[in-house]
Length: 305
Ligand SMILES: Nc1ncnc2c1ncn2[C@@H]1O[C@H](COP(=O)(O)OP(=O)(O)OP(=O)(O)O)[C@@H](O)[C@H]1O
Image 1 (spheres, rainbow, N blue to C red):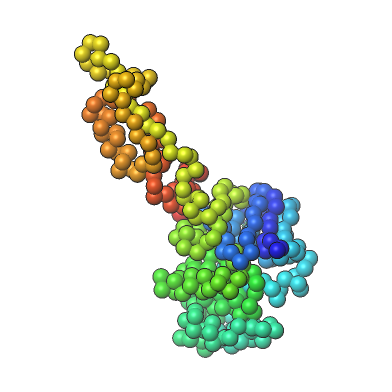
Image 2: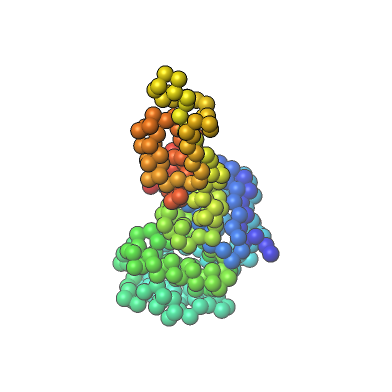
């Protein structure tokens, strides 16, 4: 099966700003791939290059096996695009516009179903110009989906939406996957990536810094290490810390993944009995409850937000 999206060593600069610095990524067929990164990481640039809206300086881009710059007529009916800020004609009324776009496709989705799923009814007759940011966002999503695309690019699909609308969008995105549609979405929201994505590609400064399923990314790859503490022989009656654990004399060995609470307990014990804790740095890195935010912080030393 053709890989829906494949970027290899893509570079793109704006003057002296490097937006993409050798970005390589693949999206799986029938999967939701989240491109996660902080503001300015290069997400929109990458999406727009895939959509044929921008040209890379170098590198190769394949969308459903085609170069998006040279085969737009092949890709247009097969790919749905939701760009940031909509890019919609401002004078058109919301539902009218959606129906107009639907007529451009051979087998469009039922417009009424999209209106229901995305809660467009209250502003169906409102002109785009007068829509709120969140309403525009939902209309842009409906337009991206109305042609029954087999691949969809969603740039920050739930930006500016209230929690209820966000859940509706998530539900719709999941239903796309259930229909076999491949989805590539960009987001700087960890919970969005964690909730939706089969695979997450974390990018920073225009390149991939980590990728995998949410479980792969949030499960420490380091095997559980051992923290050892030992009481040295009491030659002069007083226990002394030592660098060399001596299993013959009151040694304490802990194995496994430690939560921050467990780490604190170990450190308290060690302090009370004047034990030297070996491998305590391993204890700190093995929290059982890592999030994508922790992963990003570990990799870059910065917060995602
Ligand atoms: N048209 C442009 N002209 C100049 N600089 C640009 C242009 N487009 C993007 N950039 C710069 O390229 C870098 C990547 O921008 P991009 O919009 O791709 O990031 P992003 O991850 O989508 O960020 P955000 O989450 O804020 O949308 C940023 O430093 C941005 O300022």
